[in-house]
Length: 134
Image 1 (spheres, helix red, strand yellow):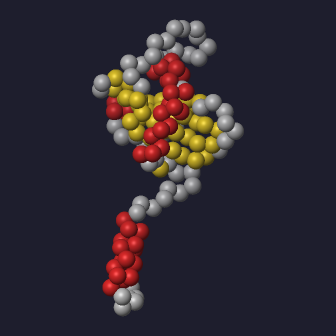
Image 2: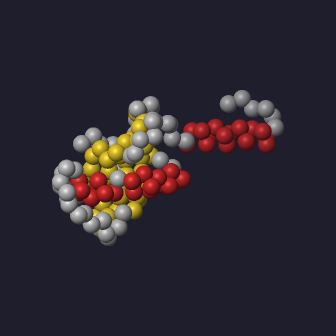
Image 3: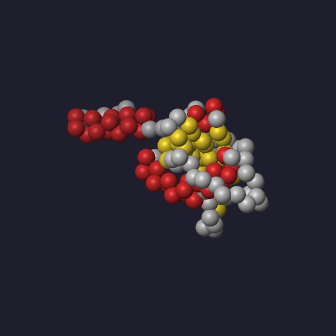
């Protein structure tokens, strides 16, 4: 790196270069990426599909009339997003003291209601949140 001869300027330049090197590369378009802590406010998106998530968790088809009790708790503990023809949200939701589910929720570009696309439960949902299709 070329120096300016001014210690303050050279130190500031070096600090900026080190910060840039430490910064994670952005995800490619269409790639899944971890959301920031500020994005955890998306709990409301998960809340919009809590009823559908409970039905899917209990394997109750959507066309069957049934009274469904809510989860013991329903707290988003991790979140990833993927920009596609809208946004896919990948949530890790704590539903009991030691139980989690992973949800994939799609929100279209046109402001439609969030739609639960897929769910993972059991052992796989106890692990880290990651992109999934099924």
